[in-house]
Length: 67
Image 1: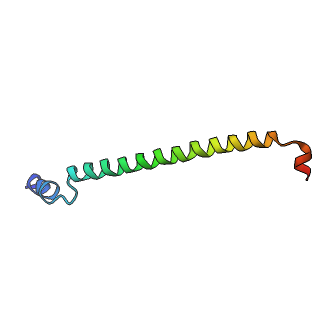
Image 2: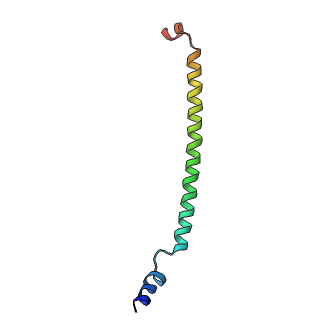
Image 3: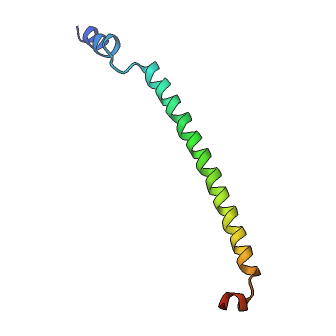
């Protein structure tokens, strides 16, 4: 009797089918990976720009900074 009720509760009436959970997990994981890739590209651009600004600052003479 218990096995039959367990089978109905977790098999037939399961509101969270494993296939649906796997599909949603895959979808959201791909979405998060794409966002991380975009953020990494933004980070690399930022670091490149920051290095460029530092190099330009080094080219300014002390007299130019005072005026």
